[in-house]
Image (cartoon, rainbow, N blue to C red; front, side, top):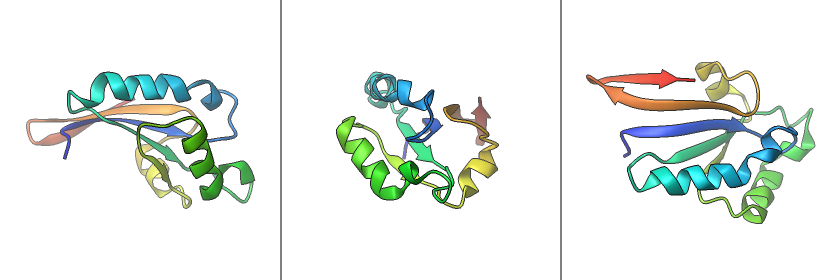
Length: 104
């Protein structure tokens, strides 16, 4: 398990999030071999935004050649726990003195 991670809350429908897939691929390439992988999470309400459905996420991941996990948080549980309120919303997570540190 990595000791550090880059976590990005994103989605398929947001015009700002649509600007980032290749940057996210680049960040993952740059840092994953140092033990800092990128993990993307979509926490959008799919009843409101059909474009963010799990099936559409898989299609987006394949069409953009994502080289990182793109996870579905349909209940918005993880987003609420982190306090993510918009997309994209990124966090850096690392362990320091046996405590997890989370920075926006």
